Image 1 (spheres, one colour):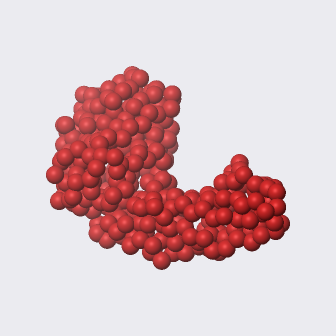
Image 2 (tube, one colour):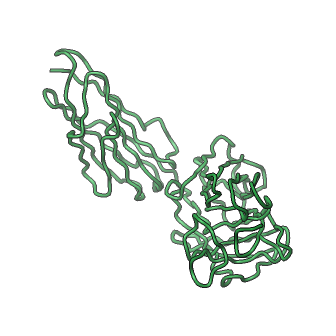
Image 3 (tube, helix red, strand yellow):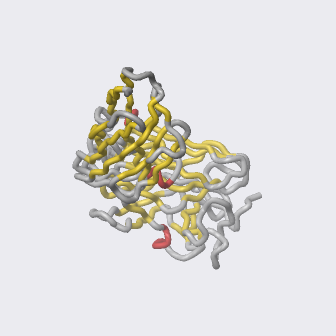
Length: 337
């Protein structure tokens, strides 16, 4: 028996537009909204109020934070799916854990408490990423997948995730690191503990529209000698597009140097959160880093190697949208004195 106020179906999303084919191995699985780094979204409240019936074919528009706005055309395997508002908002019809209360969902149910899934959503312009929170109608663990297609309906690959044992809503998204090659995605459930694989809901659709490449580079500025040694690196976006999502700068502890909780970690730019993570000095920032962005990072360490020994220290910068990894790692040699 369903643990929702209504019962719903499965969903396929398609995006039709001319595009250059991408390699399947360019796809990255995304399992949390922050890592998606989206620059646009589609809110399903525009389809109507809670319990509004959804026809087998429908359309909605993205917010269009960055031009252009995307028109999304959806298709289901039948009619009478519904817009469902996540409880405990009033009114609401989807009782669950994981969705934000008050969010409008697409619930793929049908009039006979079966399912209309999968769901296909078609985008008016190809994108580089898409994802959403997903939840099965029945309680218990479930597995979901997104199959990704280019604009001529050739499959680029599939990404998958499995919920926790309780069946809480789980995020599943995909990023094509080569650019906006995604023409369509099909969201479906492959396994449920209770109910039907065609019966589930999705929350707000996140989109990535970046067409210009993001390229972060790390370069060496200076390193002092003596006690303590201070190493300074620069991170710069040398690409033509903004790097969204979480950017991480790491400086792992090499042999001959010692980091501690009292190590001074500083950056020349605001927005970064820095810490000593085990034996790695690490800084992260979730704000978009656009072309020309530069930040300097200074890390302190105590020299433990004998005097006269040369120490190799390597630092890295990573971002899920970085299209070139050849300039993401830098090693410097430090003389112990």
